[in-house]
Length: 430
Ligand SMILES: Cc1cc2nc3c(=O)[nH]c(=O)nc-3n(C[C@H](O)[C@H](O)[C@H](O)COP(=O)(O)OP(=O)(O)OC[C@H]3O[C@@H](n4cnc5c(N)ncnc54)[C@H](O)[C@@H]3O)c2cc1C
View: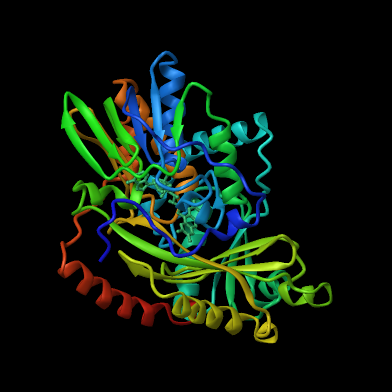
């Protein structure tokens, strides 16, 4: 089990590798004192810093990031986002909660779109919608409940049969689906790079600066190899790595999930991946496989989970290939050009942990698999909480709070058992 307080991935992020090289900002190289510090430059951390600056432009604010922008989970994800909430395991009881959450998500998503537009961030944001598709009878039953919630919450959608899905993605693998119009796809590494570049110049930003230890004295001390950063108020936005500082250990676990992107598929075979030039597909089961057609001629496959550490590349490749070939047997000679793992902060009930941990210490984590808009929303609210502003009760009531997770060794044993049982349930959705 890793004892690092920060991620140390074995592979580079494929989305980042597809972009031109960028020069990271310098690491922290001397002792420094600021008013506010933020650990982690993902969607959450950047939203915290932006909002702190907006509300308190004279404050000295610093962000410290262990890796470089474009190599964290905010770049390693599948790039689906939306302004509404439509849970995977929807029930009518959840519809009302989802409606309230959607109001907060909408606000955050509008803010993201505004920053993208105002700063000409070229992140390929496009509203192509998402296909939620089921390959199994159980998956179809679950999606039919999602349709009921979509109807109740007036979320525009179209119900799809096997042939409709097959036409769109080129594979007859799925038996039932829904196309949700209000889903946007994007290039996540380009977005997080753009958001970092769009930060006000007065925000200090240190890349390749892993925080190794936290200490409380008069305020908070962040120990790094280049120096100590002191602050009065600190936000933990390091997501899956918050527990590595000893906080929220019984609320969140670091889970790795994996993605691969194929090499470019020849023009003469593009018909095999459907009529639509861009599409994104989400599974009905949480262990299921996410798929995207990207850059017109490549397919991205995201699936597979591990607890606390990355699995071997060989195994990840084998498992992801199996999922790809099951759907497109005629493309079994197409190789993966990129493969990478990324972390998420997993919470048992899917709710985030958000709030004050201690005097001058705040945290927001546990976006699970949907942090682009959620992290932006929670980060903005956390900055307000740090400044004693705003009323966040309605937002937090609708989001709920992360429930208890068993400690080790029960956690690992539980993970193995639940993974085995859920994998059987997920079956061909994987
Ligand atoms: C493969 C994959 C697919 C996903 N697909 C989607 C999707 O389609 N849509 C979606 O919305 N979400 C998706 N997610 C989830 C999404 O990426 C996360 O919810 C999101 O990144 C959370 O943002 P964050 O800012 O809270 O945390 P992160 O993005 O994890 O940012 C935390 C940052 O903290 C840094 N850090 C950690 N420890 C330290 C330390 N000690 N010192 C300094 N810095 C530190 C990390 O390097 C990291 O950059 C996916 C995730 C993965 C892994």
